Length: 127
Image 1: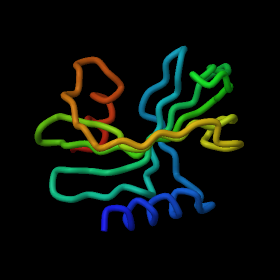
Image 2 (image 1 turned 180 degrees about the vertical axis):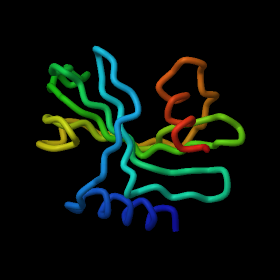
Image 3 (image 1 turned 90 degrees about the horizontal axis):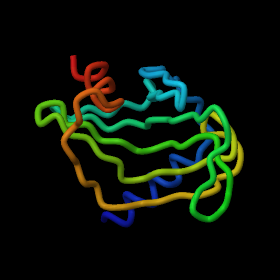
């Protein structure tokens, strides 16, 4: 069943659906956004897509350049934890262009650090 869910998730994430990206943090190094159209709430737990745009190309471990990363992120408002289980890296900003890398891992929620972008995301979502 889990493999089926992952397959469906991959197909849905590959479909051309227009996201509604909302900026929640801007620094000289990154713009951090989340997709307001895809927010799945289950009690105090929220699953959503987050996006990081870089002002200039970043080189990944494979030597490919990327300008954005999109992550399937889970936030636990009550426990104040977050984590990502899928990350896709793109050659252009706003999760556009070629996919130049991707990673899937088991979800592991970690405590949100004070002053981090995750803390700002929690403040925005967990009202």
